[in-house]
Amino acid sequence: MNITVKNKKLNDWIKETADMCRPDNIYICNGTKEEYNLMLSKLLENGSAIPLKKRSNSYLFRSDPSDVARVEDRTFISTSSKDKAGPTNNWIAPAELKDTMKRLYNGCMKGRTMYVIPFSMGPIGSPISRIGVEISDSPYVVCNMHVMTRVSSKVLELLDRGEDFIPCLHSIGVPLGNGQKDVQWPCAPIESKYISHFPEENLVWSFGSGYGGNALLGKKCLALRIASAIAKREGWMAEHMLILRLTNPEGRQYHIAAAFPSACGKTNLAMMQPSIKGWKCECIGDDIAWMKIGSDGRLYAINPESGFFGVAPGTSYETNPMAMETIKENVIFTNCALTDDGDVWWEGINDDVPSHLIDWKGRDWTPESNTDAAHPNARFTAPASQCPVICKDWENPTGVPIDIFIFGGRRSSVVPLVHEAYSWDHGVFLGATAASETTSANIGEVGYLRRDPFAMKPFCGYNMADYFRHWLDMGDRLGSKAPKIFYVNWFRKSPDGKFLWPGFSDNSRVLKWMCERVEGKVGSLKSPIGLLPIEGDIDLNGLDIPAENLRELMKIDIKEWRDEIPDIEEHFAMFGTRLPERLKVQLKELITRLG
Ligand code: GTP
Ligand code: SPV
Ligand code: MN
Image (cartoon, rainbow, N blue to C red; front, side):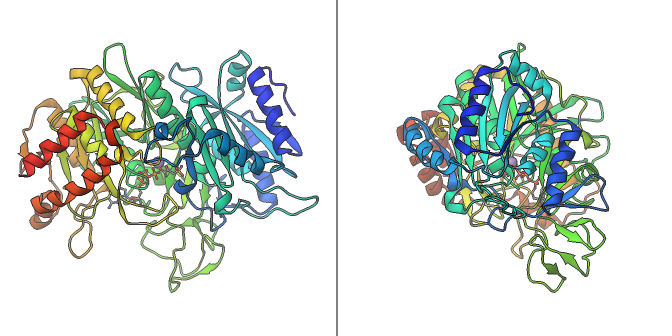
């Protein structure tokens, strides 16, 4: 061990874990550049990292083809009883799950180094921040954690002074025999992968995967699943939301938090540059928001992360120029394609498709190949500080006061571009019934419609019905200071399968309407599903969109909406008597309005 640790709980945990996993070495991380470079030199040595000639200090990694996204089927919320985890989570009793996993962890780090990564979610020392310690046997994870969280000796100092932490244990699950050569991306087979959470004791155990949210345990495991359970107990919120600041031409600032499911547009909206004159947008966070009620009674949000783990495919100077600027240097790319001149490439990055690439599986690729050059869930890991439009307050420990909540998803039909909730309860109903077509951010079928309440189906660390109740409680506490709630769908398609709305920078037009609703500058039209913009109130200046597309985008087909009801009823029935009465009332009112 390279450093002496004074925190007793941490010391005991390190020892206990080492006794179980039996690594060759233990290394305590301090988050320095030298340490990052040391990890990279190891990764370069065994061929895992490919240096990119075209981007300074940037590397490409190729995962095992079986380990390309989160594994919801192998993700568990292990509470003392099944009903505490609720119907939307996989559950195994803690004793049984720990037994199984201890057998897997037994000797799993042989031939490897065990890294102890002390990190802070949120600015170090802020009252809203939480300390975690990830133990991992993956140097790739160490590098990613450096970018995505605050890894620092300052965190160790806080721990030395007795501060508590959330233990997050991770192993890729591939011990090495004497002299055995490592593979490029070691990981365990799907059936022995476990992404386990013990929210009653603030503990995470992950085994078998090296990818994204399965392995970077500060993100979905700590900052969402464990934090959502803590937040429920303590009266705050941990949400799968971007945070942005929008400033109108008069200089009035609006803070918006938006929950869209995985790969449904958070990173893009968070960095969006408005196409409308005089409006400015700055990014505070692109994936997770922690929110607490401030002394003035308003809801304040911080981004607990310090980097972006963003979807690469579809990212371009056209769609997300600020992301493109963010990822010029100091980036870890995973599962992108490699160009012959040493740069990354992915579907949608630009119009010229190279005549030759090495695809994400390391094979030759040409435009004639019938496969994706980059995996659809290929990602970049980049420091948030490199984003040209990062808000100056992005690390402000008090956070920013939220004016507007947006829910949404990917719906090729039925759901209009935008509607506004009638009330807080109606907004909670919109969140609770949100549905979206699945994406490749999870291993499983892509493109089927599922309910993904508040974009939290994969991330809620307790019974979702109790989570709905928590949202209602927060609304009661916020009263007249509660943010206004809206619902958007950027993904409605025409019958010939084309997106009806241009999206991206033009989404600013919809945000502007929301701000004007907050100010009471514009009215709205009542509809069965919510309040709609009055024709002419969404600023379409300079936008060339056929009138029929607009009509189609805004259309509410009563029959289609009536057809949604049985599915909503079935979704709600899953929660039994635990479902808050107030949501049943909302459903009844919707049915009445639909006639
Ligand atoms: P996670 O990181 O998985 O939580 O995803 P995210 O919500 O941050 O998704 P992201 O912004 O990375 O978007 C995913 C995909 O949706 C990308 O391929 C984008 O190009 C595409 N996308 C984002 N915004 C829009 C939009 O306004 N319109 C259309 N048509 N596509 C969009
Ligand atoms: C998501 O799937 O919502 C992500 C990517 O943000 S991961 O970190 O892999 O969960
Ligand atoms: Mn996400």
